[in-house]
Length: 141
Length: 141
DNA sequence: ATTTCTCATGTGCATATACACATTAAAAAA
DNA sequence: TTTTTTAATGTGTATATGCACATGAGAAAT
Image 1 (tube, each protein chain N blue to C red):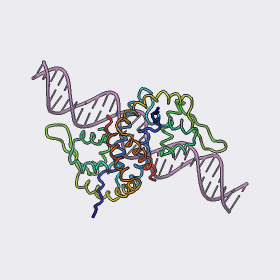
Image 2 (image 1 turned 30 degrees about the horizontal axis):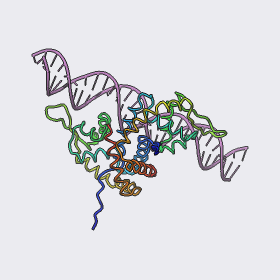
Image 3 (image 1 turned 90 degrees about the horizontal axis):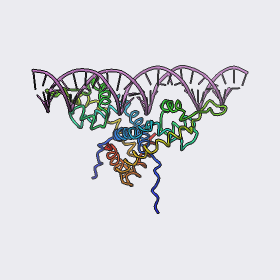
C-alpha cells in the first residue's frame, strides 16, 4: 500500500523565511529611492487601482486595515498619496498624487534591479507556478 | 519579434501578501496550543537541528540574530528551550528542553490542521515547485 | 605582555503586522 | 422621529523584523 509522504516542511515557516530574505533584498535595492519596500508596494498598488476606499485597499492587499493606515501615514505626510471623503458618507478614498507617481517612477529602476535578480534564480515555469501558488494561498481564508 | 513579457507582479509584494494570510491562518490554528506560529517554527527547528549556536540558528532561519534572541525569550522563560555556554568561549548553544518537546508535540495536531488545509489548495506539482522556488529565493543574498 | 582585531552579545530605535476594543456617523427599522 | 444596527474609524497593546551602534571577551599579531 502507498504511504502518504510525510510532510516535513511548513508552508508558514517556508514562506516567512523566504519573505524575510526577499524583503531585505528589496529594501536594500530601494534604498537610493528613499522608499521602503512596503511603501513601493503601496504606491504601485494605488497606481494600478486608482482611487479606492481604505477597506477595498486593505482587502485587496490582504492587509489589516489598521496596518494599512499606519503604513500609509508617512506617504500621506510626504503627500505621495491623498485622501478625499466620499460624498455623504464618512468613508474615505485614497489616491496616488502626481508627487507619488513621480516617486514611484523614480524608484522603478531600483525595484527592477531587485526583481531581475530574483527572476534570474528561477526558470519561467518555476516563476509562473510560484505566482500561481501564492495567489491560491493568499486566498486561504 | 518577440517582446519580453512585461513584469507586472513583484516577488516581494506577492510573497508578503501570501505570507500575511498564511501566517494569520496558522496563528489561528495554533491558538489552542498556546504557541504562536513563530514559536512553533522555532521549537520545530530546534527539534530537528539539536543544540546549535545562536548564530547558526539565526543563519539557518535567515533571521536577524537580534530578532531570533527576542523571539526566543518567551520560550526561554517558559523553559521550552534552554541555553548553555560553549566551553571556554562566550558563545552559547540553544537546545530544546523536554518541556519544549512536549509543547511542540501538543501543538502538532493544530499545525497539521492548517498544513492540511493549505495542501488542499495546491496540486502536488504546485507544492513541490513552490517549495523549490522558495528555497531558491531564500538564498538570494 | 601589550595592542589590535574579531566575533558573540547587548541595546535602542524604527517599521510591519495583527487583534481587541472604543467611538461615531450613516443607514435601517420601529 | 426615535431607536437600533451597521459600518468606517480610531487607539492601545503585543509580536515580528531589521539595522546601527555599543560592549566586552578571546584570539591573533606585535
